[in-house]
Length: 225
Image 1 (cartoon, helix red, strand yellow):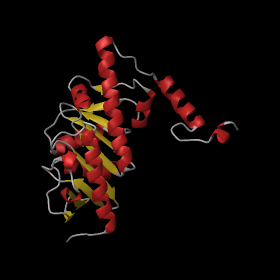
Image 2 (spheres, rainbow, N blue to C red):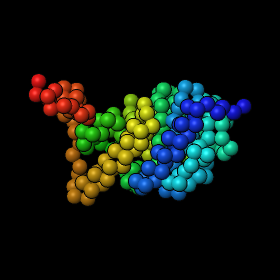
Image 3 (cartoon, rainbow, N blue to C red):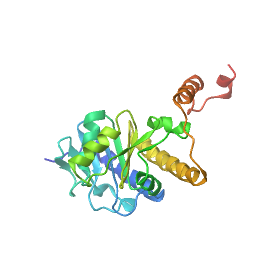
């Protein structure tokens, strides 16, 4: 049974566009990585073997939450269980998995990426590294799901990174933020031991962000009130 709902068609276009953006940013290489977005009980997800930086909507498959294909001609990514697991456990809307260079490099040497900059609080603070397991396996999916508990991102040992968010755009932004933070950490580590924000400093940032409505544009008139 296929589902040709206009919503699914729009999401397939959005997933393809997200992949092309991530490819242009250097986070996706060749066929390595996968992206999905959930609409109720349907998931639009990249097809296995597709070149992600050149992805078209036709290379995005739609499955149900049991992994059965409901639209599209191609098999979904081998990491389907990981994506479906994130949706089931965390009720999120979009998942991005990349083999981004800096994130992958740090996954080789760290047990977690410390909260070295307040922007990492958008991901929940420290970013855990899920233990290595073979790609596409239930063991890998479970390992990553555990690392994502209370977090918007995780590194995958000797593999890459995964982010999730309430929107596809936000999941992509989280992937870009994580890669930036990994690059900052790597550069700092060359010079010395990177300092991390402690719990009190992190709380202070959250309080200041709430008080100032940080991250949203505001008129000068409102700001002077």
